[in-house]
Length: 272
Image 1: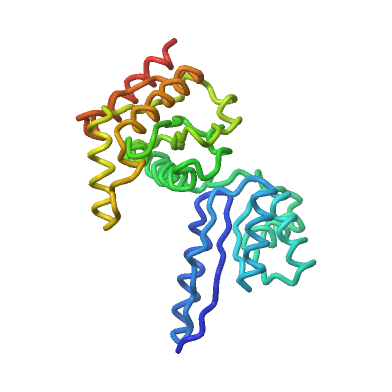
Image 2: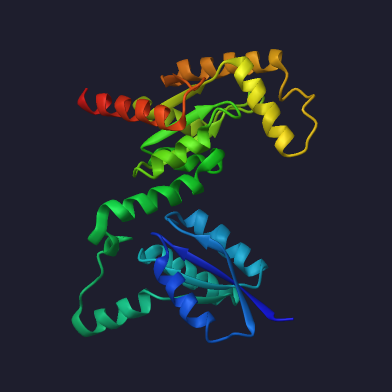
């Protein structure tokens, strides 16, 4: 059995530099398995970085970072010295050499190399963003989003998010559940960025039933109950009204049609 090495890669941009290094290194060790399932792009907060480093320590991982933000890099270096975490900083040691030679400091702007092909890399960044902030995983993403999509389960929030991300929009989405309070951070989001998705109750019940069938699960539950779905949709309408969301009925619409409506709406808002 091959030995496995867990590798965390951390970046305040896409993290492609560390991925290329890991690819180059791993081929030199054919008898080792490099487990890089732990990739963390767009890390830009100290609390977020610390949580990742703590998890890496628990996993006995090697951490490779391309953080250009000095404060974040110093935090990671301090943590590794204090805890014994195996940590490799690919950027700041080179920055220090240049500073010693010329006195010049880096501008500390993540991802600037990708501006050579802005449209392509904006799309890649938007897709990474949509994955990171899908399904309400981290409400902090609402504040950085071009679009925030709200809706009850199975109203195509994720497919719409990914479609818009492929067009370069930074999109986050949040499932609305009557029993779960809406994150307070949503109050800080510009209402013009909030989209609320609706669907006819009968269609939604059928979609949910098909989903459970595909998973081999029993669909005789509250999840597919028509009365409960009506209540969920009424609750979602109240939330949309509270946050000034632009409502779109997804019933019988393709993701492409809905995305077009979202884009047209956003264009109109930019002219107001």
